Image: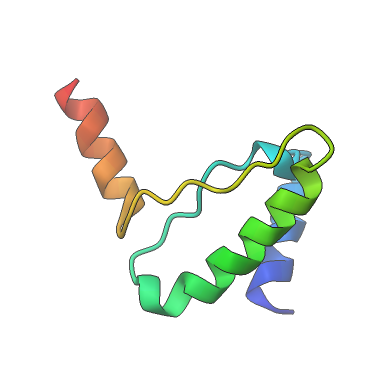
Length: 73
């Protein structure tokens, strides 16, 4: 099973709507750009009924940047 299918299965098993996904966290953008593009297309297709939503791109190491932002608030 590919990474995309595993991610989508995990989201489905948790009963989370794909349209509520905001971003994909990763450490190495070169390796994960394709996964991001594929998941972004899935989110856009799922949310197109309500609005055209894209995943946020916060840059590399998203989780660290977000954590520091909340810590300094």
